[in-house]
Length: 276
Image (cartoon, rainbow, N blue to C red; front, side):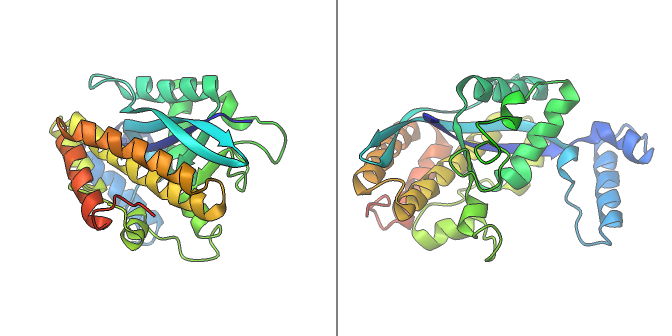
């Protein structure tokens, strides 16, 4: 039985190194290569989508919340042990991706994400293949039903965009939309569309801070889902929520991203910080 949860999110920029192999466009200018990558994707989608496919993303941040699963009377609560981004400001992509696969391979946590099955994990798999990084743990499990690749095995990987839409039976809402509807903070300040400019300017810490607040939102939404689904009860929900609140309040004293998140959480919940 898995004894940890690992709530994760990644941030990426276009992989311009792949452009010459893809289209033969050899101009070394990064901006020109990004335009070529956009042109290619518009061409193959009939002008509908310029967003690069998963294999053409370079990972610049991997953030996570790690918590121990406490079980009592058939319900879970979560003892938060760590919230951070992988590597350091100087870490290259290979180090970040290797750290993710090595950590999860050692601990085999329950993965929790928002669109992780559709985006984050495919990107991480492609980048691991690029660097020859083993991800054996990701492809094996107890049996054909209990493993990380089984779409409906939410005890192994709970992708909230899948679970909350009943695996596509209803519309797949954005994380920010669901947060707005249930009184959670959602996006604060930086947006995914800002990541490339921040990366170009060398503002890696700001990217990491933004990625971590997405992880916080994902965890809060998972708590609300777990309460609804009977995975946790009110005591477990409030225990986990208050642990997170304490961590956010402590970090908000020194970190502007956490301060903005704390204020947004307070405002979105009418001052209750999502108490039920």
